[in-house]
Image (cartoon, rainbow over all chains, first blue to last red; front, side, top):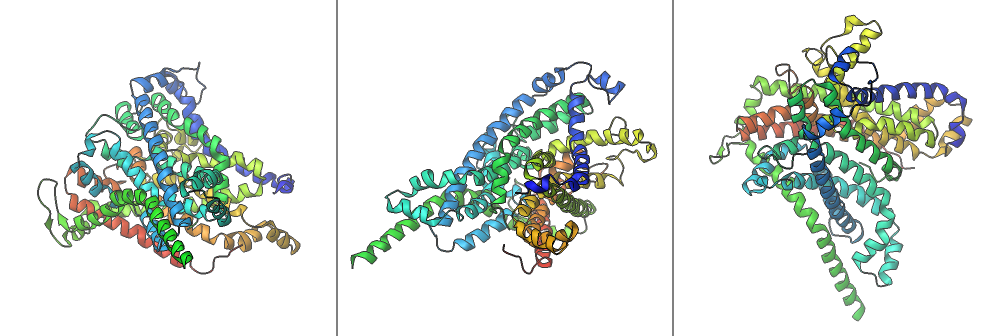
Length: 280
Length: 301
């Protein structure tokens, strides 16, 4: 759609405004990227100049001495495990709610919505106490991941359930008549139709899990293992203060993989949002 | 005779299967959310440090919040950052979505990506990046101001008591605007083109299209984004910790920061729990108020 309009010359002012806004949006990141290749002296001589040569010492320094590499792997591990668990648990719950017709499922959805908008501040203290009494705080990763999975489930279930309902019931009925069991119907018929909804859920959850700080910081108070990137960056900031080239190198290392993965997923993500499964 | 019985056993089996599908998710949500919320309310009426047993103190914790200067200023700071950043998020997000909508789908993908970038980045990273932007000597903003001849406007943005909250709120609103742009834009894509063809025949221009077609049809989506924005905008722990650690003094300390200090440094878990409840009540009532103000017909199309 809109192919005609995109060629409209009347859109030139729109483009100019958009290009201006876009440059305001990216400038801090470009500037940080530029700074990350400089030495501290170079930076203070002229903050605008391009780096004299492509210097990777800041990255190596941040990666090794600043332990960003280790934090990165921790965050990656946490993201993979939580996202896979959320996807599995939310898909089966959403499938049950939309297809198998549990009595009272409308109230259940309302409850999910309420849980979803609850500020985490009203959860973390009792949850911390429970998990530390159970001895889980001493095991790295588990407490952090448990919180993320539990908090992401309600929103994910709602989005997936809304999308499930757009799949024609006849399709599933036909599979049932052909003798396909619930699990195999879901895996072989429903899942292939759900790609865009799953991508939407995945993007939202990844952004949350990759960027969460408060819970991550509390759950790693007593341990030096399993510290994710966000907490690591705060430690890094405390350690290096205003050594901007090094700090910006750390920032770039976190941001670039995110951008790359989004470029990859954007197509499905927009399709998932457009289908109207994200509604209030 | 045989048929109805068979049907009944089938649906019973179906209900059983669905409960099995639902159970794992439900268990985890109970452990991580439902149970803690109720315990948090219970805790907020008690005086408790981990070692002793909880002592019932009634409303004392709540009464203390309204006499404690630090707690009061934390609530005010939270509200200030929340409200300003939500306004920026909605207005900027809508503006960006409208501009992008004017372009073709292919061309807009590039801008969509750029404007969504800040929403993808962790708040902590954004915070660190803007500590750099706002730095007094070597910061990007002050250097740009010098460059365009506005040297008089340069200042230590995060060190000044009058600019620190505004700077934080601005950065937060900027970050959220990416997601609201995305949600608004995808909602606009769903509006049938025939509406615009009709309005064109009647001689309406784009601003009138916005006023009479786009905004009314997007009411449901605006309501959704507002509700989401309230949740994001009051979760200020990461941005404040990475940008100012609550300083200068406690001029930018917000409720989550104060709460964690009270709980984990001073061991006053009951008092911290009460702060959590107050924050929840504030966010909850704001969501309800906006839903009430924006009530009425939403259109199906």
